[in-house]
Length: 102
Image (cartoon, rainbow, N blue to C red; front, side, top):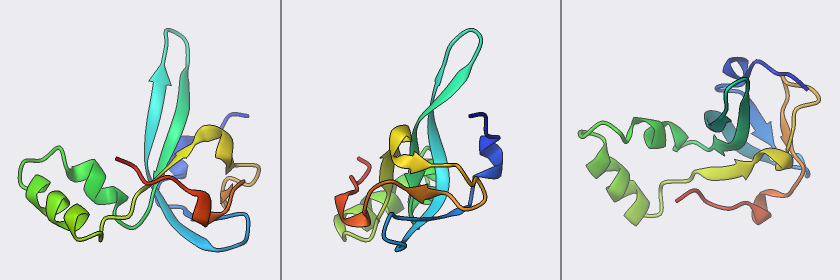
C-alpha cells in the first residue's frame, strides 16, 4: 500500500480499543536506491520536542521533561499501524502495550 506520509503528519492516532494515543509527529525511514520504507512512527504530545532536539537550545528542555516523566513519545513499528484509512490511522495494539521512544 502506498501512502503519502507527509499527509499523515499531525494526524491523530487511536489504539485498538479506541483510546487516544497522540499525533504522528515523525517517521523513522529506511531508504535504498529505488524506494523509501517507514520502519517506525513517533507518536505523542512530546514527539515534536524529539524532532526539535537537534537544536542546541531545545536539548536542555528535552532532558528536563524526560527526567520529570513529562516526555511521552511512543515508537510504533510499522507493522503495528493500520493505515487502511490514512485519514484515521489506528494501532493494531493497545496503548498499554506501547514502547516509549528512547
